[in-house]
Length: 285
Image (tube, rainbow, N blue to C red; front, side):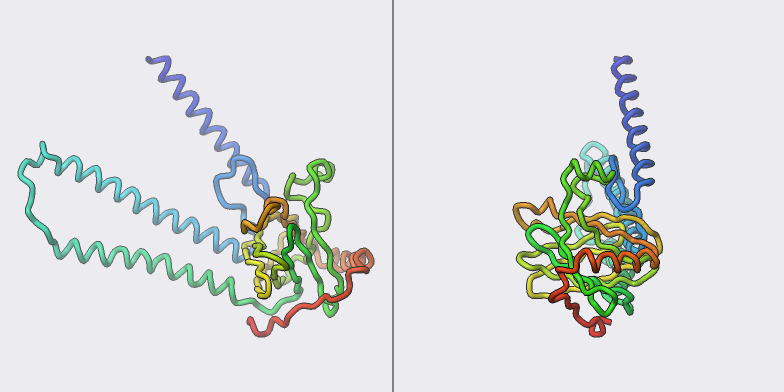
């Protein structure tokens, strides 16, 4: 029996160690999911950081409530079982308790609602943008269009790479694409999101946005980060047969590299210059 116990203890310690190692590994990977990840992806925008903090705040509240309810159940079982309390109370109402279990949940909800309203305001109020990119969800890939008045005037499709091509590029499988969306660091990026066929959802966790791409409806969101790098996401709606094969890759580069990329991209995607239009952002501000 003792040997069996110590074997289980060793396995538990090993499992905890692997989890901690995985968590440390996940913390070092930015912009994509990681093995053994048990938390949200590391935020790199103001909105994403707010989401991260809001998540942690709600987890604390839920944990406190769960522990309180567990303690209350244990107390009731121990204090009011038939053996310990052979003569049960006939009390059916208690004014103090009824006030407490009405007021306390209200205060908890208010404590959750206030930061959630601030987060919602931060998400939906789009600040003056430096770059506008139109995102079109299609079956089953994304199309990005850059307006001509901001140095663009072209559009291109973004298709998932095969596992072999992703491995050659040193990028994660089922997340790497042939043509990434490229944006400058330190600039406010406005995204105009629409669906061409069915409902998709444009989402990149580390950048802190998720917006539905609905046919016939133009939705808008935004992000801004000073941290250069490559950030991955996925369509977050069950949009059909190949839903799992329409990843999102956004590369954030310096303004100088972005200007050079624009010039190169205009030549590369010159055949896609027709019908590149974006809506005015003013109405959403």
